[in-house]
Length: 144
Image (cartoon, rainbow, N blue to C red; front, top):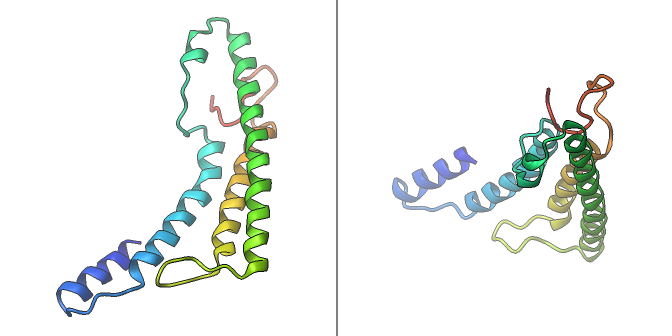
């Protein structure tokens, strides 16, 4: 993305010939970066969390169960979202829909990347982490 924008600046201000593709490519790459990083962010527990309820739970067992329930619920919501996004991707593929920017690509390619990232994040939330020993916090994404 940095190279695309740098090329745009050089082309626009030095050569007086702006590139019509650099902004488009940068936005496609940003989408890929976000959705392909999402599984690692989820696995490592580095996602943004509103934890005011969890912080007020003083019993560690209750907190652990609450966190696990929250993770599983979020994982199930992601599974539903993956189904909707994947179905939309199939519709885009069948209809040969292109992105609306000047450098057009098949929209289903971007939707596929989003589906894969969301599906992997869902798996990290739904499947138990094998690195946790018995008695550890079973919440996916939480590090000891």
